[in-house]
Image 1 (cartoon, helix red, strand yellow):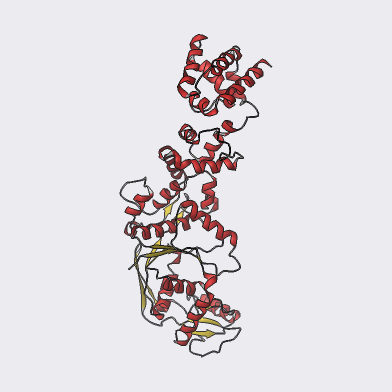
Image 2 (cartoon, one colour):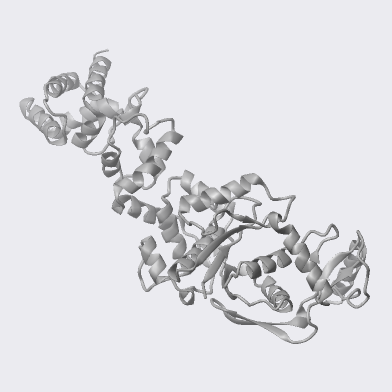
Length: 467
């Protein structure tokens, strides 16, 4: 048997972190068992589904690297004929019926039940009435009147629900369009889904879906309901807690592998291990080790992980992401090849925790700064600084090789020649070339900046001091 999982988001908004974790767990389970992972877009809510949301889901999956095995995403709106066929089959076999109870009648029933402190549910008025189809009828599924459904949940353990607690749910609206619980069942059946891994907000749907699957004589998948993700305050994670959209994490400078590593640890563990490569996640992931309790999202922990990945990843892997972020601030690093990006990553990653920080901290390598940072300039550009910078400019201009070691020697030799401490030479040089008193080590900074920009900026600072 081929293990087959699916991720089935509704395109009514962005791909949020809860959905991304569900996708990741489903993807890992399929990859671990050399199975198949299917992406299915549940877009039957025509009023709320948008193409923009579809694209946000596809972009999020691509950025995270969660590749799916179907050639293209499966859209439920392309399968209406199939749903209609199954609805007809259920009616024909006596598992479903037409119901013409009006909204007003149902609302009155609901109010009466609530007044009597009863659970609001359809009372089965049309169940055996053999109502004919009309433009006012919905189709309801005949839920068994007795017995119970036991979900052998791979995360939460056995969950038993008595059928008498369930009512006859609507599986087709008055216009004939199918409802969520029907489409999900047909899709899972047709796509031979073996494991349904999803959020625990779907637990109430599961016994209903199992009943429909049984009525269709379909194989039952195994279910794993993942606990929700909470904010740091214990409330359900939402926009007010900060970034919750996957692409917002990209925009804020996080690496996809850092977010994946963080998400896999939200509810799953392997001993005390914190850092996992993708391959380790695949090899070690097991639904039996998923915690049934809710997990809290901690931005500080994610930031720590992101810095870890910036520090320890192959710089070549970081470069494409840095290029994207440089582009976001108007720097086309694909065209401007003046800066060695691998060396730039190595130089900046210790002090930068996000790619946004790294891109902004690297502006001066590409663009002229408008003015010197006031506090740094006041401290560095003092009496004698113009002379220091002139000495440096002459020595730099005569260097045969523009490399880190000879650049370092020039700074050191100039300090010795002028009988100054190294800081009295390096700081005016740093402010002159970078615009502020903060940069990687000065020899690395100058090597990345290049001879032409360095000499031009030294002359600019000399003129500024003398003005």
